[in-house]
Amino acid sequence: MFLADYHTHSLCSFDGSASLTDLAQTAAETGLTELCITDHCDLLNTQGKPDLSFRWKPVEEQLALARPLFDGKLTIRMGLELGGAWEFPDFCRELVAHPGLDFVLGSVHNLSLADGGVDFYYVNYKSEEDCYYVLDRYFDCMERLSEMDCFDVLAHVIYPLRYMNSRDGQHASLERYEPQLRRIFRRVIDTGRGIEVNTCRGETIEDWRWTLELYKDCGGTLLTLGSDAHLSQDVGKGLREAVALVRELGFDSVARYIKRKPEMIRL
Image (cartoon, rainbow, N blue to C red; front, side, top):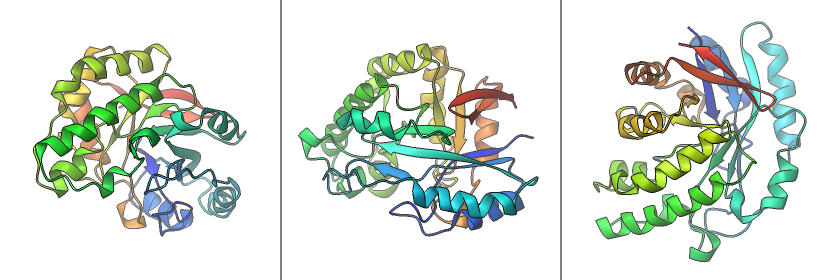
C-alpha cells in the first residue's frame, strides 16, 4: 500500500528537535513509501510579531544528508508549511519559487496581525465564547489564504479544536461555519488544490469525519495525509487509520506531489 507522510518537522522548525535522517529512519522502519519534510515558515511568530527570517539552506543541508542514506528505500520530498501567507504575499511568491520545492502546505496558526497575531496554542480557551471568537477569525484568515496561489493543500482545517477541545475541555464544533467552509473548499477545488487529513500524531482521526464529508460534498477529491510529527517516533502515526476513514467516506485515492504537481495514487 502506498503510504506517505506529508506533514513532518525536523530541527529546521522552531519546535522540532529531530534530524531529517532520524525522521526518515522511522518512516522506512514503519513501511512508509514517501516522507515529505514540511518545516515551518511562519510569517508571524508565536507572539504575533512578523518574522521573515526563513532560509532554505538548513533544509537543503538536511536533505543532502538524508537522501543518499535512503536511496531506493524511501522517497524524501522537499516541502514547506507556510503560515500567515496572506500577511506578506510578495515574500511568499519569492519563497515558493524555489526550484527544488515539491509541496507547500498553507496554514493558519495565528490570529491576523490586525487581531494581535498570537498563535492559537497560546490562547486560554476558558469558555465557548473564547472558542468562537478565535474560530470566527481563523476562518476569515483561511478564506484570505484560499485566494492565494502560494500553497498546494490547506493544512489541518480543524487545527484550533486540538487546543479548544482536546486540551482545554471545551466542546466547540465547526458546523456553524459550513457556508464559509463551502466557499473555501470550492475555491481550493476550483484551482486544482486540496486539503490534508492531519492526524495530529494519531490523536484526531475521527474528528475529521464531518469536515471530510463536507469537503467531499463540495466536490473535493484531492487529499494528502500527514502526522504533524515533530519527533522521530511520531512519523506516520495515524496514517493507516486515516486511510481507513477516507476509504469509508468514499475517497479512493491520495495525492503525492512532485515539483508542486499532484499525482493521485489509488488506495
